[in-house]
Amino acid sequence: MASPTDSQDPFERIYVVCEQVPSGQVATYGDIAAIVGQGCDARTVGHAMAALGSRAASVPWQRIINRTGGISTSGVRQRELLEAEGVTFDDKGHARMDAHHWAGPSAAWAREHGFNVLPPREGPAPSPQLTLF
DNA sequence: GTGATGACGATAT
DNA sequence: TATATCGCCATCA
Image (cartoon, rainbow, N blue to C red; front, side):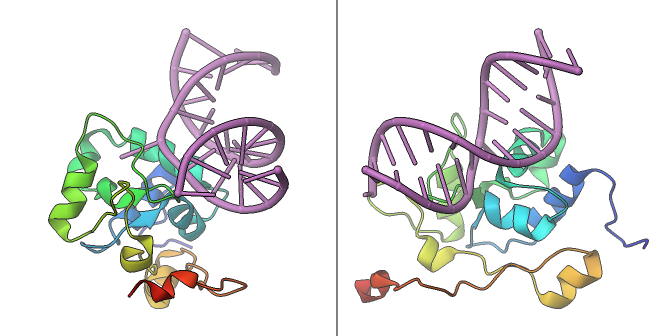
């Protein structure tokens, strides 16, 4: 159906999802790909970010990092931008995914735009890091 | 059309 | 946690 974000370009959809990431939070390439769906995977998101062009001023690309919490970009101070938004990093330069990981857009928004909802973080995860605090 | 490359992910060690 | 290997897909030469 003709959704307001029924863009034919998969990249355009990726940009829309990226704009949903609130300040102070970060999302992984895999998360964005899971929300966009339509065959998009982590690598597709990476290509979209590399092809931002003039959209870099409108899309919070800095909030998109890899699954390890590290920053693959070079030349641009992506980490500095995140820290300015309240994102904290550990001593190894990895973002605290357990504290700033984006839970995904609201189910209503996702359905309204034809996107998927980020799967819940449940499973055989013992979460031993819970003792950090 | 094919091969190589890439802002990646998941699994195994 | 880090490294190695494989798989996935889009873009470019």
